[in-house]
Length: 79
Image 1 (cartoon, rainbow, N blue to C red):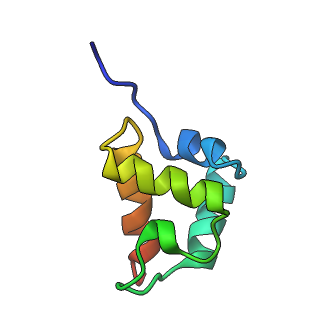
Image 2: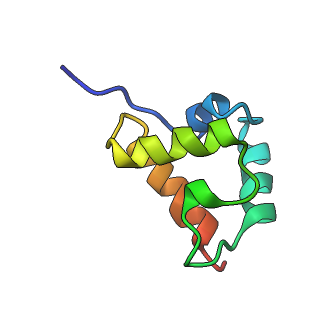
């Protein structure tokens, strides 16, 4: 059985955020760079339910893990 393929737009929709390309770019630009010591799910801008979803995505290697990791990299980048 194939795993579902999720992209950044799907992830932002799942998180209850605006999920068009421009909104995603603005979100990332306005929240980066996260300090290296801050895990994605610990960032102060997430609600508790968003943080739990992101944490579980990575810990459980869920269908969302790959795109969650992609967001993690983008938010930690120093541009």
